[in-house]
Image (cartoon, rainbow, N blue to C red):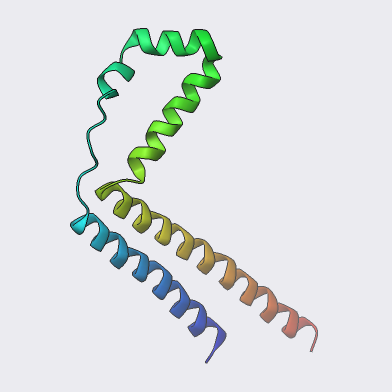
Length: 111
């Protein structure tokens, strides 16, 4: 199998497989359970008390934790997997084709 064909095949399998798995998870996943503290955590008083005890880094850390938690549960997990697989496949394709071009140039200049 030619190297470029192999690169394209791997890219298709990783990207397409991730899209199929992500779509299946999105369609079959139950919605995430309701967080009973969500309303309280969205208040200004809660954010000010977290900032008072832990500083702005604690507020930022809480926001990151909330985002990652929402992206890895329920239907959003399917979207996350699909997006990550497409990104990984794209990075692989770009790096592999660049490496193939460099190897081809090296064989042309140094027979």
